[in-house]
Image (cartoon, rainbow, N blue to C red; front, side, top):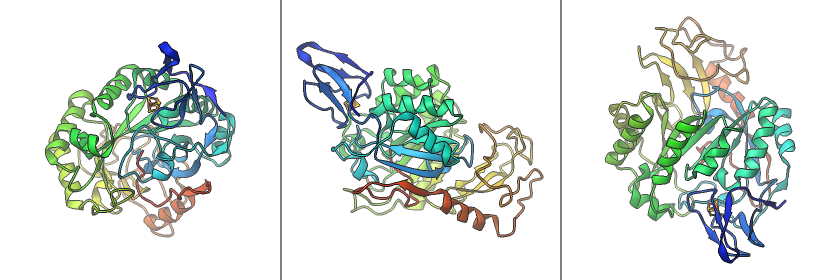
Length: 395
Ligand code: SF4
């Protein structure tokens, strides 16, 4: 369905200025913006992907990655075609760089109902940049919230005050994904944007004008986007502007799309990034895409015991009480919501006495098995790759 957009301004000569992202495309009559989904038709901007869903999956919330909001929740993830970034390393390039509008017709109530009928606790708008289809995301999100679901954006943060202004109506949580430490030469060469400044502005807007929970990622790309001084600068900015408690996840790169020539990020490089972030005062620093690494866990900042134990996207141990205080020392962790019922109590007994109890199988084994059921695709369109590879997905 094609629907008139909300985020634009009419200009002289029949042109329009799109205000959905920081590119602010100036679009002549008949033309489409860089993202491929917003077209000037008769002097009015239209969203070409309203109700066009290209893919849908059920994932654990940890895959977004979100670790401090409703842990263990089962999330229905959707996307449309198109993107406002041109990332050379994109894992979802078949969706994000597709400039042909495709997908299954699904109006907002249908999307919300599908999530509910599959027992999900929330919806994620991911795999491409959600603000390019903000008007559709908004309507789905409002419907989802009405049905008791949470809404999550997996976003590059390259937004505007206008897009942030629509968030509080429906959005609960956002992951803002930096790449290559947000270093200017990197973002120019490998993303196609002038600089990362609009991302920082978006974070401040969200902090000041919404109640949306934020988490951050940084995709560390070896040789071209892995400088520790840049990671330090980024970490310091987060600490100075948000304080110590917002989670940051340093993600391992794997070769994809136009960057097949580079190796996987060495684990040592990720560990060095984490060390730098901790030195700058950030207290919840994670490594992503290295299953089994000790920095997948949440540690209590007070006594350093493991508060939430993880393996990949799975929760394998829970050492918090009902108010999310550390079961070892009583420290209040900044985690919103308890362990989701999607993580079966039979398989995963709640722990209140600091002992990680095991069910019939080892908890790790059981949780991995459960997650393979959660991580399934049930909307899959010809020409799309499956997005269930177990890698963290780029926005
Ligand atoms: S959302 Fe699309 S059309 Fe609008 S400014 Fe961004 S790239 Fe351009």
